[in-house]
Length: 346
Ligand SMILES: Nc1ncnc2c1ncn2[C@@H]1O[C@H](COP(=O)(O)OP(=O)(O)OP(=O)(O)O)[C@@H](O)[C@H]1O
Ligand SMILES: [Mg+2]
Image (cartoon, rainbow, N blue to C red):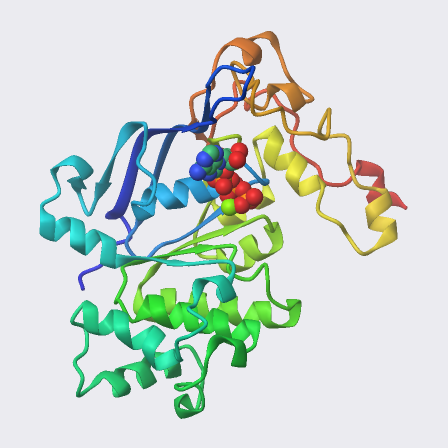
């Protein structure tokens, strides 16, 4: 496959997703805007990490990319073709070349099927293997995800495997489809901390060795930095992308007040450092209620620096240094310091 880091596999343009929230006895039906004017792309062979707190729209965006949620407005492109002009073959190619790795490996695998069935049947259906070479192909993907020797796993049921091994099976199932892009939505949040790094390393290796693009979704800034060290980050808040750029640069010098607040909330095990931490970066703890989405900048109700314009006008993402930042005040904010300046003098 010819690859270029500048060719988007998927490009979302001004995407809105509204969910219908239903109707109670006394309430009117209403919609909830889960994605708001999202522009986003993933290039061939790229790693992109998406972070944001619960409910910020990370899974919804991934589902739009996977074709599982239809946007209410906006367009998306696959390999340069607009979604509404894809031929049948291109739509099929789209579906096959974007694979998802779910968070809950137990729920994602059929408990009644052995691994050769779970991995082999999709290969047969998509004609990526035939009855003669199937067992060999399944052994091959098991070996790639480091489940060796493969014969030990091939006839096992999901309950006979550990959480880490099941997660590797999900990666194998995605790989068997020869994907261009893997969407990994919190792939390690349900497994033992000691096993997480190995799974994340496996994803990074698939990216480096095979050029498969990875979208890694997480709450955890530490794994975001680890997985995405050669890639990009997109920070989401209440359905909007508020900052994007190179992972290392964005996390070293965050511009958006929300990302600054997220970074200042990460626990630090050293009590001396922790005491000197600048914590006063958010005005209230809770997300606004979904029934009353803030006007203007959606973050303004929690932002320490909020000004009048932030309450009325939605900021458009613009280039600031090497990042894209959606904040009216990006240029005038003080430089982010994770620790108070006296920390160095203690
Ligand atoms: N099918 C749906 N119907 C109605 N509302 C939905 C639906 N899917 C998601 N939402 C709402 O859209 C918002 C974004 O949800 P989403 O699952 O994308 O968030 P998330 O960032 O992935 O959160 P988490 O970190 O908890 O997984 C939430 O408020 C959620 O309740
Ligand atoms: Mg989610």
